[in-house]
Image (cartoon, helix red, strand yellow):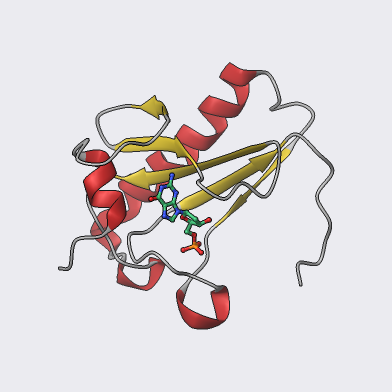
Length: 114
Ligand code: DGP
């Protein structure tokens, strides 16, 4: 499985503003933020896309979403709200092939997306 820039962030080989970490998940600020809060949550196990997740990854996927909610509560914007997004492949706009959840918060977000 190919390594990506996110693998390098997990291993601290390149700098990133890491704001959340547990045994399975790392959260760090997006380089190109689309909202006042824009954090990427990634599993330490590098699945390229959501399509690559297997039934055995169900617990890990749950942990990924729980990390997002945990961070939102910790930072105090859970009640006001936020968006958690997974982009998959070309039409989803995925550019880094290490599964990640975008957490966007801090402003009212439009819907539907463009
Ligand atoms: P996506 O398009 O869903 O694959 O999102 C990839 C995001 O990753 C994009 O919003 C920009 C961000 N990104 C790309 N390279 C880096 C990097 O080196 N550091 C950080 N912090 N974010 C990055």
